[in-house]
Length: 451
Image (cartoon, rainbow, N blue to C red; front, side, top):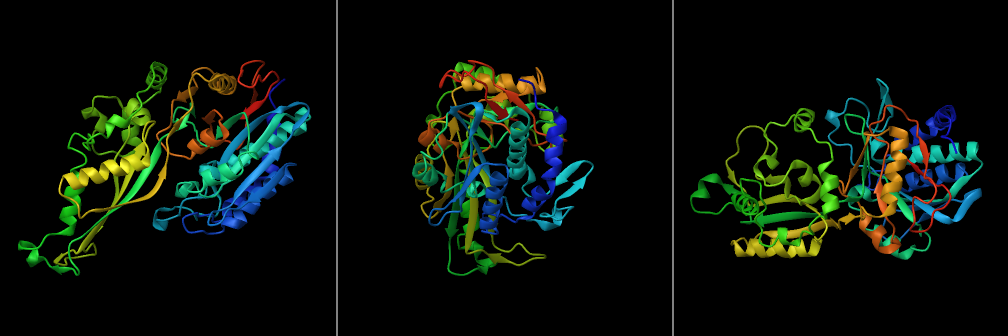
């Protein structure tokens, strides 16, 4: 079968643009619970208006998940199901003074659409809906069943995604899954990820007195800010190595295939320095492994925020009574948040920092699909047909985090991340998976991935 006519895709994209803009205007900030139900209903309407079945699922204390279903066409294979994972929530728009446009008002500049959440992940979802409509209009139906799992808590760590998957495992049952992540790099190469890092996010606190004191008393009284800074510094040395006992022992060593794939990932240190305006060398310059290996295979330990004492204009001579830090640890296969918490607690106590309170705020398990799964080859081959040889990059896992683990656990599906970010066009292209490429469920007839 041939590729969908791009004129038809553009027609559908243009037809749905006003509704897409209305979707972007919904302030679905999960951390603040803003317009969450309205946005879930908008997702439901997108699916239903394209001829699919949709349900807004709810669990107590959780933001809704939207279930979508499109059945295979008359000539398709109803025994096979492709699942898409997306999310409708977005990050807060702060700081407002750094925006050049109104965050929740879609604005086009130089052919690029700006809005909070347009890239992560609202446009990905709408692009897939548009592609399904185009496929149905031109091919007489879908080649397989297509399902959607669209959640509203991804930006706060997906705390209830596993609860939904456990409760509705039968509803979301599928053979393979395409994740919302994935993008193009600066050289227009499509990145496809076979997994994600996990995360353990902490709040660390020290309280050294009941009140702030005059700084002259620093001659005799301990300082909560110094206590916390010293505790944090004990976890990582000046060579950027994490020195918590047993920390690296948890790592599952990458396979030879995974290392081979990682070493093929294009990485330009100078481009990264220029993009982010880095003022220091890459920390991997001092480590025994490469930047490519660090982004894929190694955990991180990051101070994401510090707060203590007086930070206003001018001088105020105080000795702060308390200090707080946010700590972000990215996890790779082999790591479990509870075990990481145990090691950090032991480390602090062993180094005399029993007074540092450590609270796990949120956590996500890491996940990686086996690169030997036939689904990987199927997706990569399909992507190359659209983007060309040398324009598709496979990552064993991305450097970012998402709730893939529960999908692997409760649905037992291979997962690959592919998205539409960075593209200069709203068009979505469809490629068919040819006969017998995917053997796990004997996908004899074609089915598709939307890239």
